[in-house]
Image (cartoon, rainbow over all chains, first blue to last red; front, side, top):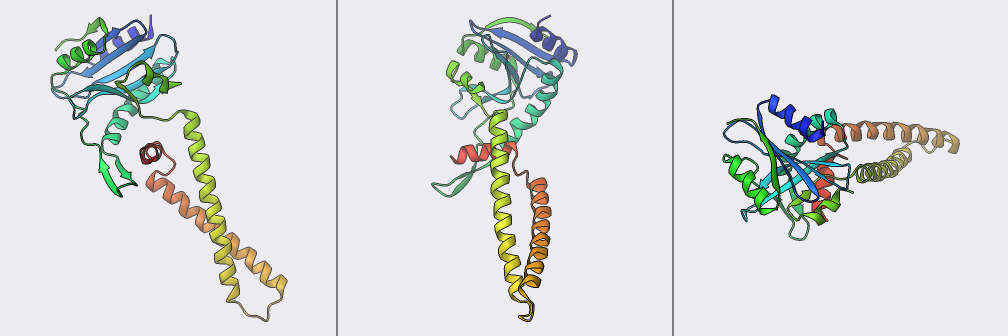
Length: 142
Length: 102
């Protein structure tokens, strides 16, 4: 069984909704818990690499959807599951990290990033469409 | 390796350093801190030594200087360990902030 299928089954068993998508060179697994407002987690792999990138979907103040990766992992199922918990925290830590701009001597927080989504299904569909991914499978029920 | 993803798709942002980058950052930061502590310890020990009686011989002063140096350096090590534990120095967050500052 492929690792993406194992991940899908794992998160499905935890009552997450999962979306497995791909384009010519990459695969994505997007998933979120069955709540009203949640982060949308992403696991990404390029076909030419054994590395998996672990991150979250986000929306900037320009309304553009993007994915930020906060950790990575080799082809190890248990390690990946454990690291996703760290990603969950890292995404919020980054969101509230205070940055310093030495040129203007000011501190700032990147509060334009939106991490929580209510209409997750539409957001995922929009992201996949805008970036040329085809949905391979989806699991879980609303 | 991972940053190549940015070339495939502009919507990907890599917000974590590679293992190599983490190690280089930690080693470099620790070395800088340790050298700073050593220089400060030498200066403090020398200043304290200068307050002692002039009747002491040079070997006596040297021995006291070495003891003071060890004590100040040891205390500084404890303080920097506490600082690292409490402020998360040498961690991922520090690296992210450093990246943004650049």
